[in-house]
Image 1 (cartoon, protein in one colour):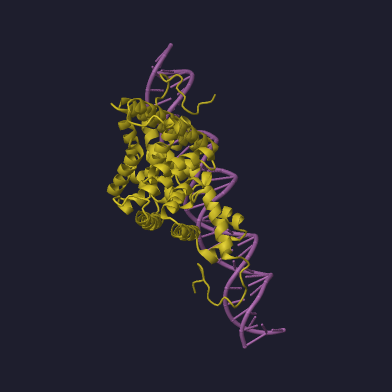
Image 2: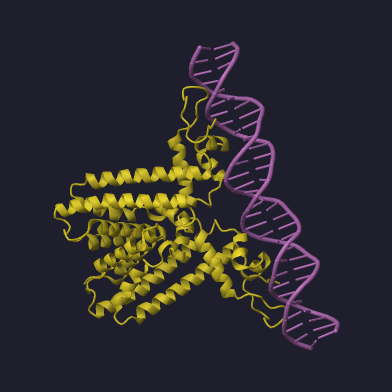
Length: 202
Length: 202
DNA sequence: CAGGTTCTGTACCTATCGGTCCAAAACCTA
DNA sequence: TAGGTTTTGGACCGATAGGTACAGAACCTG
């Protein structure tokens, strides 16, 4: 019987787990985030999560599966948050502005997806596929907000929404990267302001 | 006697080397570039370069020293090339435009410095320091070109050249990122055009 | 050609890698 | 409380990591 990976059958029987899946996934993700995938050993993961190897494997499968799980959760949460911010903003252009500025907020830590993509996309097809899909989702969300901003009269109607969305996303990722490379926070914030102004002026 | 790392004393005596340092450094760099630092083993390096471990250590020191050497060379060459492009352009604004567009040319491979920074800057102070210095040098070069473009009437004189330079650099790095994440070449080129147009219009 | 020196490749070292196994512990149902 | 089932954590595994040692090859000078 396959007991590995996320089994939930008969949870009301036998010895119950001592940990919360979400907590473990968060700790593990933070470890990967801090050191990168290849540079993180299983011992690092057991130390970060407090679980033994057996528990880790029983619950999530091997190192790669565990990593993909954290990446997947991160992407899902990020996209949900982005959608909420974009659709929740009074005027769409404000949401777009916040989207760009958000690139300056991660600072040295960077973006988990971006870091993972840079480290692994060239050699790991699963990561590459997940990253590509995530970026398409983001562009779609942003493009919808661009269209709304056009309807609201805050962006020129002439521009193609998808192309414009990609441009904003590129600017945001550039900010994330420059932040990770060590630019001081206040200078980074200034760059973010300048970029948002230039790209979103009518 | 310390024979390690780049010794050149008495080159006209005893058994001469069978390899060219530059060739080896290029092969090694390409290996690091393709797989990342942590995911590259010494066996990978001997395979890529054709040298044995003994030769590699004798000539360049350990894995980390060897890596730093390739990173250093890459940065030096890149900055020299950038300076040449910027100072060699008829009008400074054309050089700046090419600078931004260059972010779309690396495609899946990405930028060696950017990849290395993303993977290592958070945990490796040497890499962090080198990256920070490289980015300052680049900003300085670009800022000088911005000033020239202002004198030539292609950019408004009101803007602060360093802040503007950082903005252009951020856009370029964003393109590198998006390219590495798998956006098709023609779409990436389009984004690059759009960004350059938006940022460099008078 | 002899002596001295450097370079090269391989064998070898210890530590750690990711992953498996399993006996004991912990819990639920009956 | 007894029986059944799952979880746990550490012992253990072969493979590979980065790095060293060293014997012999290759070359220059004199």
